[in-house]
Image (cartoon, rainbow, N blue to C red):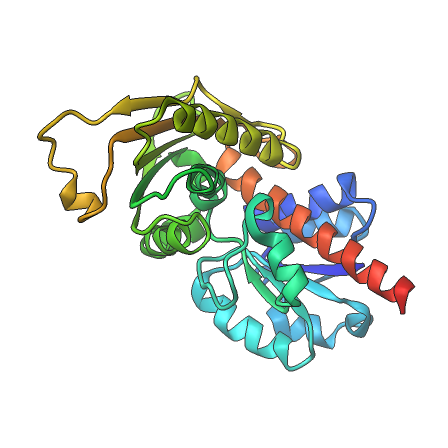
Length: 316
């Protein structure tokens, strides 16, 4: 399936290199930017990928645009609104790596198949780096026991947060919190992001806290097993994704005012999951796992879309 990447910054360039190096089903037909001197466009030219520095309008004007079936948008939330409107007029499918959330939130290990079955893949949103890392864990817990409240904290190296990430910090927290509820299954979600200035830079670390009713030891065992299965599922497309330590499930002390978080729901235990995400270092340093999980998830989603389309064409 022929694809294009809009955005010649860190995320877009890493996407391009992942597709070129790893994908057997995606063929990158264009790299799109707005800065003619960007490193992403320069690398694309050296690698023989057609480029334009005229944004989405330049992409639409390129030879071969008609053959492109899917476009990755790695720009910004505001830019995506304009880009998507122009691409929709040409019937192009879009994978949105910004917090714009025009289309449904998708986390490949959790709900991609659901949207493929529904045919709801004209525009899908990859949530945020924190969402891709933590929502699978919330979903794994909620499959065993209701989650009245889930909170995630994503800590990333300050050096891995470029201008686009910093410009979208507010959207990051709002989008991730909504997706914790809509995709993860929590009744209420909260998201926090920390830009860690430590030197040398630390790899991405994520903490997931869920309040649950898990009075039965068997339920607690099932939660642990569900989380471990989910970590394995995500690691199949993000090899650097792993548990930092064993899943912790602790009783909530009597008198602790959890009603401020969980409302009237009965909760007996707090589930604590600690993760780290090491990048594959295809384009960016290994500490930039926050970017790697986004691009890896996007490529995994695109490859699955390509496979489903190919299967339907064969059946037809």
